[in-house]
Image (tube, rainbow, N blue to C red; front, side, top):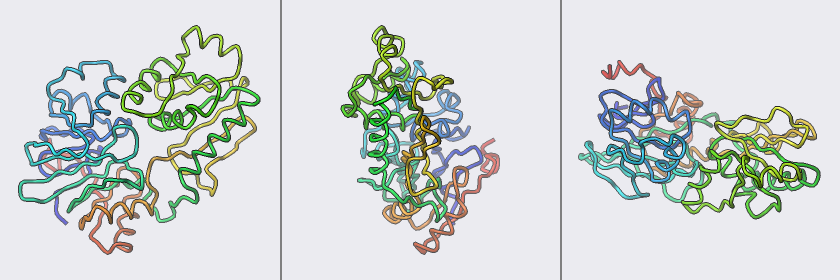
Length: 341
């Protein structure tokens, strides 16, 4: 196994000699940002000041929406169109959608010698376009062979819609979810429930980015608006909570649904805790079978499993058994072992 690819203790993914994904390394000139979830945003402020940043156009817009900073005018940020190779110091970088959330990408670095190094990022399965690489770092969120869904994500979406419609017959519904998952829920409910959808001004701004990129999300009512005041008195609405929003502490005025980004350990995507409290599994991660299918589709013959996020050791063993190709977990080494100071 070569040292062309690895994942270090911080979670930063290393490709070749000069590219790092979703992390900062002091002597690497290039950072690729695969998406905006917090566990992939480590040391982003340091990268802003010292590295050239590559990302999708949608990720760039979401970051501007969140931070409202100088990201829009920075000269060291390059947005990369889907499937359009772009030259960099170590060859050519190509970004393809990973289906995980708006703007999320897979990364392919093709070096001048023709060797292609890749990183899956967090990914959904199936995918229309898959990177073709020789060596691959793969997400291990569901690296355990027992991590297989007994239901499809389409079934989970239908169950969520049915649950919300049923609960709305009696009272308001409060939905709490992580970024990406909350927008997915908005798409599911938009046009399918005949009540106002409420959210914080921050979340409404983020939803505007989704609308800009063609996602079928209807207009959301800001909770600070006059219209929201009247709606809250009426009592029939769906209110969304996400990153940066204060979660409801008193649910007596409605039912609460937590949207889990991870699969339930049951054969049912819906867990009922009480008549007013539920969880629905809306995961945008491939399960174990999807992960194996994705790896096979990349054509990679040398695999590093991300052992900082998920079951890297178990996935490496599963890849060896199922695909018969070289696989091992990431070293999770301190960056100093790579001479990165």
